[in-house]
Length: 324
Image (tube, rainbow, N blue to C red; front, side, top):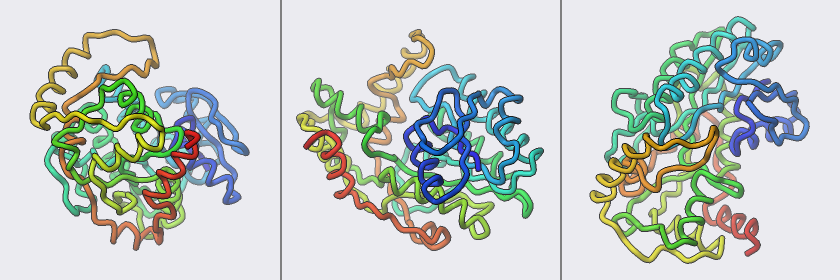
């Protein structure tokens, strides 16, 4: 089977789990993936020849490759996340692939207001916040529209995946806390779901194994243990031995400021593949100041899956990773 985007943290965890389960695994991404026992095919979603090589002879695809950023050239998000997904689906159908797991995000259905005990609401590109969320929403709709009995597709939406080695949340929290540049919005009181890395990987693989029960559906995946933003950030800081945030900013002010910073950031120029991100965006401010936790009963039932690692166990593993 094929795993796209396996050079990333979650993609490599998914590919490694499949190898551990005894599957023959091929990975596809622009740089080599750190997955022992898998075969790399290097290339881009925007290269039809590379895609054809990647899908040739595989029976299933788990698609994680995407442009993930808070800001950037909107056309790049479309080219990779929307057009790249469409090209992958076409190549997979042409190669007689049977099953596709599209790895999505709950942000595809987040409109900026609180989410309290919801399920997987329909992806909504018109109302999703930011270029990443909008293009992932459009790509998810394409993927699910391709579902048939002969070409089965499901969308798995893991929410805020974190763990050792995570650069999207953990390293940013630690870096900004160490420099004293990490405020809590609205005192960090917003209640949010997150997903420990191993649990997210296991749920995605479960989607493949349970395709008969989940194809045509989108499923949100979380630990099902909502914590306040303040509790989660504090736990990460303690695990890494850095000071916890001690200053607060009103969420409404942060959302306005984030919109201004995001607009200004578009005029900055960085080297290709730079990880430099704006200190705040409107989407990030909304994520840090509004509740977003989800009803996991349907997800667990149809995937026949429950999280194996609790939030507290995950924080203990994080502390061990940082030598605590």
